[in-house]
Length: 128
Image (tube, rainbow, N blue to C red; front, side, top):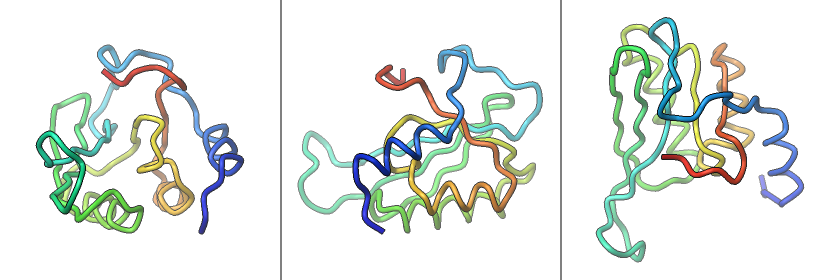
């Protein structure tokens, strides 16, 4: 699957934008997670280094982490699949930034197949 600017625009338009800023995003019950990745690379992105997929339950603070080889959708998808079996209360929703790490057809299809509701931050707004 090759991503083009038109494919990215179409995918972004299909995912609901989060109405709140990340710092105030509060859900009523456990199961809604903020998702992101961390590159453990020091001051440069050159070379091989570990990445971590992080999912944080915004209601109770439960954190799931999974080391992945890189941000390729296959590795991110494998980490997300592991999260469904390892998080004791399950995932009902996932909020993420606008990057293609999460915003791609395989991840969106997986979420839909598992009844996981996706939201994303507003376009062109910083995730902090």
